Every structure is written in C-alpha cells, then in structure tokens.
Image (cartoon, rainbow, N blue to C red; front, side, top):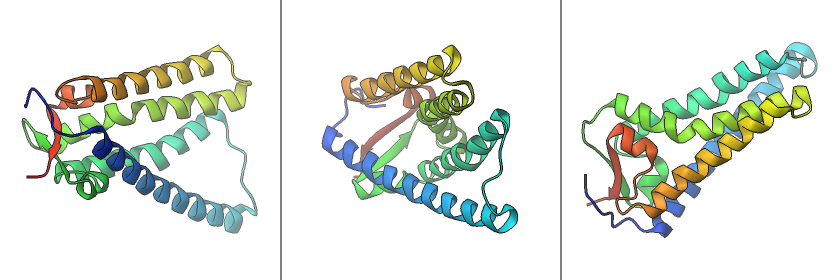
Length: 168
C-alpha cells in the first residue's frame, strides 16, 4: 500500500456521487417493480411485521448492492471510480477482499435501515434511536478516515487490504 494517496477530495466526491446515482437508480427500479407486483398480486401494499420488513429491506436492497459493488470492485472499481479515473488496488486481489470492503462500507446504511424500520414499528424507542446513532457515528468514522488519513483508506480498505488510486 502507498503511505500517501494522490486521490483528491473532489475526485472522491465525484466517485461517490456517481455511485449514489447508480444505487438510487437500482432502488427506484426496485420500487417500481415491487409496487407493480404488490398492486397486481394484492391490489395494494400488504402489511408486514417488523421482522418481515427488516428482511425485505436487507435482502432486496442491501445484499444486492453489496454484492454488485463487490463484483465491480473486484473487477477494478465501481462505475463511479471508473468515471472519476480511479481504480481499486488490492494487496491480495479477489472477490473476498472486495466483499469485506463493501460490507464495512455499507454497514452504516444497513444499521440506518434497521433503526428506521424499527422506529416505524415502535415509535422510535431507545434501540431504534441507538441504531441510528451508531449508523451515523460509523459513517462519520468511515468518511473521516477517508479524508484525514494520508493514505485515504477507510476502515473497509484497511480490513480488506485495498486502496483507491488514480488510474495509471
């Protein structure tokens, strides 16, 4: 790994914004397909238990996004990275390292889902608020590491042995 990184803040923001657009497009398509299915099958949105809602959010949004981004990263980088002229360098290339990186990267999103869904069922009890706070704290830690470390690696990069670099 390089001890310093020449990847500037503007390039990372560009990368993150493009990846956010990709995720948003997936979620909008998921919403449309799911809405049509519910309307055709049930003539409306059925009621779900909290556990059911948690499982649907996890398996329909978080798992596919983590797997897609892990596959893209294993191939050199996400769409945002490629458009920003960045690539992902691996100490030990492979899907496993990319998966670890993306599990850590998207963990705050999953914790946020869990807190919000629980809050909708419990009028935001202590656990739901705690999950939200842990989600935000972890997001701040990940962003802080990516901005403040000389090598620009966040926790997922450190654990997976990866580093975002400019494409040569």
